[in-house]
Length: 327
Ligand SMILES: *[C@@H]1O[C@H](CO)[C@@H](O)[C@H](O)[C@H]1NC(C)=O
Ligand SMILES: *[C@@H]1O[C@H](CO)[C@@H](O)[C@H](O)[C@H]1NC(C)=O
Image (cartoon, rainbow, N blue to C red; front, side, top):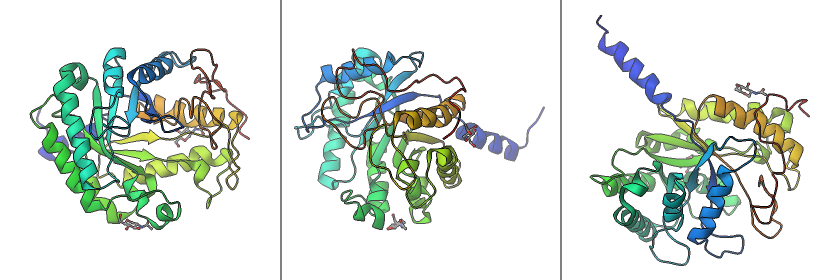
């Protein structure tokens, strides 16, 4: 049987859009709440706690990182890399792209050092590489008003994406998908379409809790999230859209109609996490633990402050379909 080439092309696009492995992970910063750098043992402890999370069947085997650079160094490899090798944790790597060209060069140096130091034990764990995190959000009027930092222009990101592709060519990371993480609003902005053209996947961050210009109660949160996801898919040029940050806080100020508490975080998990999981969308939740000590606000942690090996989750993580009624 013969297929026309256009039919085959259409089938290829559909396959690409759906080419997700259902990776599940959390976001991991490089520093503690007090800005002290995490060491390898700290990352191992967090990765093991994620895999042991009650009610999740050991599904949280992946970690999203924001930088390749160990805190307090110029360009040494982040200690999360050997921690992932030691614990067999999949990695969505991140290269920080909001601090200018010289700092991005340090990210590339650390990426190359990770490849040469850890070899295939490292590269086989990598599921994707994100060039940047919310850099396009930071240059918008809202990002600037929130004092979110310098950010990066679309043409700067395109340059960094190209540098990253060159750095991984002919290495163990060749062929790994290169993407970018940003807020759904950045993708919904056609001024950024040339960045999307340069990507293999789009990492989308969306927080209905913070969408204060909309009716953002927990009762609307699932549809608010999927409106953001669908807008990103429309802007994706047929590329896969991964969820790189979402969650609902357990503690925090009320934001318009959004109330932070464990019952609402549970509803958001049941509606949003469980439906993404069922669809096998690669998902990096925000987050396992906001801070090991201190009282952050908002606090999105499944675990509160304290020792992860002794705490219990603040809400149930099972996907039972029974987290009703909606509030
Ligand atoms: C749209 O994107 C451009 C380029 O990234 C940015 O300068 C502009 O502020 C964005 N517009 C809004 C409304 O966010
Ligand atoms: C949340 O929205 C998605 C997409 O429309 C849908 O698949 C899912 O069933 C919804 N969940 C609930 C609890 O409404």
